[in-house]
Image (tube, rainbow, N blue to C red; front, side, top):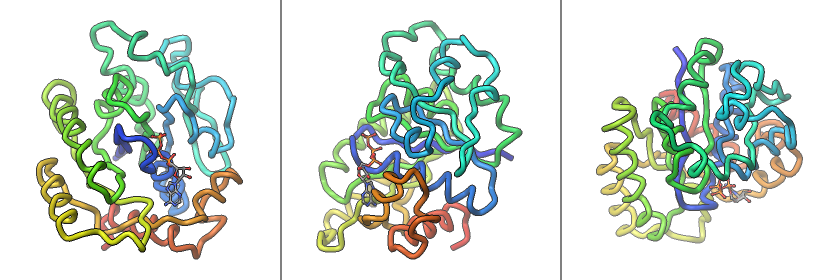
Length: 252
Ligand SMILES: Nc1ncnc2c1ncn2[C@@H]1O[C@H](COP(=O)(O)OP(=O)(O)OP(=O)(O)O)[C@@H](O)[C@H]1O
């Protein structure tokens, strides 16, 4: 059965796009058919997948200019993609009709039989695009920095998750908090660890055992529009994302 996972955090630059790309391309590498959906108007994921500037995009699906979602899927070297669009930057103003939380869910529904996993990247905001992603998903992963500011922002995200569960998607699960861009010189204090565990508990989830380290391999793969698994299979950060996949797939 297909599983849809959203990668989200309203804080910017915490590694959402990097994590969405690493998870989806990693699953594809393991032979699991996976679709990436770029819901972030910045469309960095679309660029990294090598489909920059390509139409049609998710925007034409949101606007019902195109009704068949299969025709918007780009079959790229490292996996299938529904590209993002800068035009979605106005989504909060543009989509105001009742039922606007369910647009993405309706788009993805007919595709679920074709994929084992669907991975959605979201913008750094708690607006209608993120609500659509959470409504269409089985679960979410929250990438974050190992710092107190990152934790403070999570109470707003928790509020949104609670509301999505209440009104749109009662079965939504939080897979876990994922520490990303970790620099081993920055020691995580005991106090911070405790606050992190407490925050995870409030979200009815855990902090992933896997910590994603900072690594130059990330930027190299992004610049070359390839994957860390192809470009730097032995890099620390590649091992970290592999171990995250093991954790996700319950192999640890
Ligand atoms: N583990 C890592 N090691 C080194 N650089 C990283 C790592 N993870 C992410 N980065 C870099 O950090 C920057 C932000 O990452 P990314 O775009 O994935 O974050 P984001 O949360 O999606 O950002 P936004 O909120 O703007 O959508 C990028 O330049 C990316 O290359």
